Length: 222
Ligand SMILES: N[C@@H](CCC(=O)N[C@@H](CS)C(=O)NCC(=O)O)C(=O)O
Image 1 (cartoon, rainbow, N blue to C red):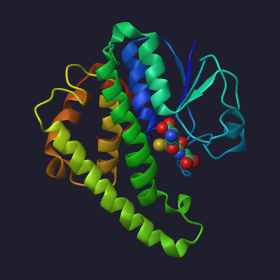
Image 2: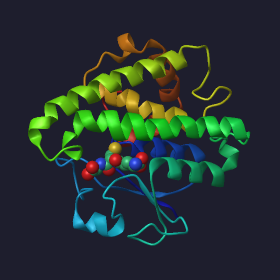
Image 3: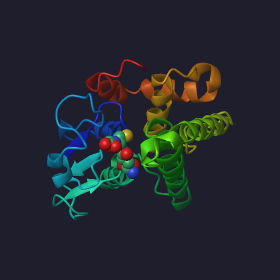
Image 4: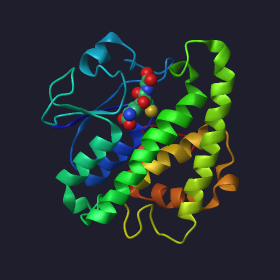
């Protein structure tokens, strides 16, 4: 059986939703990405022995190895693609090559530019400089870029499309919900700043699998 490692409200939320959407039984375990979170932390030696990257999400039960535990798959995009491809009946990744590439286009940008750069600069500036005198300017640049990225996302979703990749709900939609929720969590007026994204988030949140995971992760900011 697959075993899913996640931290409530982290980027792992997207893969958690995908796991729930495909409807297979799985085990799960919290590895907290927050220093004040419950239980084992992502920074702990115990977790780094399993996943040397010291991050979540991770999925155990996938053939192969990237250091640490055997059969552990890391990276939210890889996990979502694996789950979608191994459960095609759920229809979470288009089979049409252009539409699949559009999903990867969204996901790579969300991971690389939105999460690992702008968001991290704003929330975790110490990843970008060892000199804490630089933190205010790193945070300010992260916020400026994150606001621009959010406006760009809203503009795309405002063009009349039904889902992020037009035609069907895909792994990209719950991934977008992660960042929408983070905007709310830090107190941004998401409904005012991003009305089209707010409508999109409402559609994602209405899905029964999404509601179950939001409840299980106890995410009150949605
Ligand atoms: N590139 C990775 C990033 C994973 C990542 O940064 N996860 C965060 C939670 S959103 C984490 O585990 N942070 C814990 C830490 O920095 O100690 C992915 O997309 O899966």
